[in-house]
Amino acid sequence: MCTTEMIAFTRAHTYFKEMNTELLGLSVDSNSSHLAWMYDIYCRTGIKISFPIIADRNGEIARKYGMIVNDISNTQTVRNVFIIDDKQYVRTILVYPMNVGRFIPEIIRIVRALQMADCTNGSTAANWMPNQPVIVPMPKTYQELEERVESINKNKNGISWYLSFKEPEEKCIMSKENECN
Image 1 (cartoon, one colour):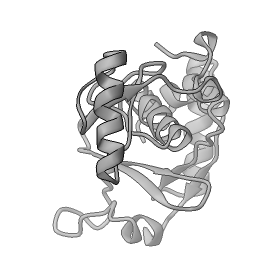
Image 2 (cartoon, one colour):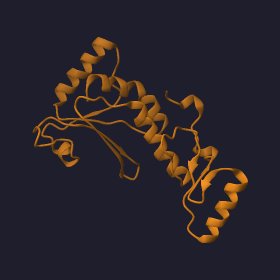
Image 3 (cartoon, one colour):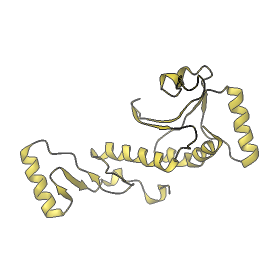
Image 4 (cartoon, helix red, strand yellow):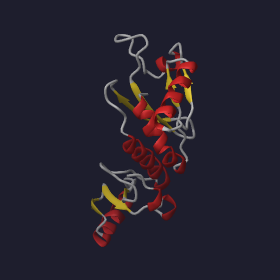
């Protein structure tokens, strides 16, 4: 992680916590190197890094997760983001080249989209943003298809039996004050 990303994740850490999400850094540098880096960031910016960083000095973890490409370097990692759910399933992997920083608002949006899809048993559309409708799961029977068409005609909530939308239940919606712009 580069210094700007450390700062950006720290600034967004509150949003992640509000989404019941924890941040964890991984670096192939030593623990002493991490401490010096975190201290330097604090001395220069006043920002205290608010999440742990794992020292993966031999790159064992980074290699298992495909973060080191041996054809390019034995120690240089690509910048990955892994979104892992509470059941220990990797739900999303974002891979950034070394010269492109991570985009924190998109990572927050992905976490929210995953949580919304799980909560509503639906899907999020392209360019979905928090508090927008979700896609209703496909009908499983012909009778459900007919009911879906009737619902769309009545409620104007879709374009066809295979693509209709619903407003998420209140329990699934994050409040406006929790939104990150």
